[in-house]
Length: 304
Image (cartoon, rainbow, N blue to C red; front, side, top):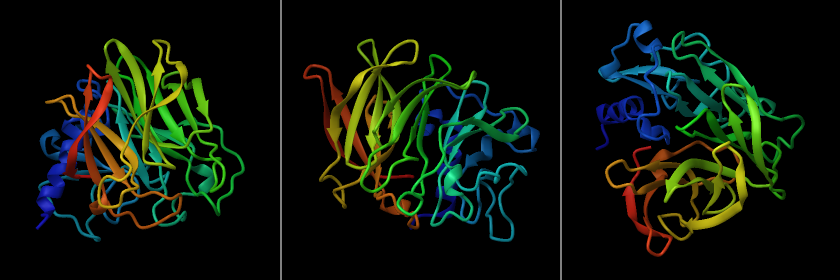
């Protein structure tokens, strides 16, 4: 049986292993606010996935939390409602995006295109970058930002938004951002995406893109100045793989021991449903340099 303690150990790994944030090893600093708030670095995880908790929290894996006794939250950590991806930079600051869960009561649909920053030292969360928003068809799409990742070589972040899309129209945007100056460096329009990951091979840097409307994974080359080179090209697909056969890729992770790409798939149809991570699947892919192609290795039980 899947134990509570095992679940907490997984959450702990989110803190001590930067790769589980879909980042490169050595890129993510440890937030100073963890010790500032009186927590032990060895037994504390940063989580956006605790039951009955809205927003970000610190989880002590040695404790069992209840509805009455919840994990620690700074007073600002629920200001944006439910949160998803956590990306840390070298100084330990955490960047997060809001993603609604079940309904929009905590996540107003017109406020879903904002990247928030949790200061690595003070722990205070504030709006950091407000991406183009405005009117939208809320009845057909309650979402905004769905993906966020960074490039460890510089200050560039990449964000995927479906804010202006609806059931019939793919109007998503992938942004290249300077996280310090808050400048939009470049963008690719009319593409709905979820999972994002910077990947390097043979001296070429690419952004891997998990599509939100299909099971396909695309890539686009990125230049040293953060601009996109050319248009996205198909890399591989998870179509007809796994128990559902039509998963969307919501996250990537590079396996530090093998260099394989772990692809986390889940169902997604632009509607608000109760999330069930037990139904997610992890697909392992390996890049064949000789044939310049990805090879599907197998399916593993997902820990997320």
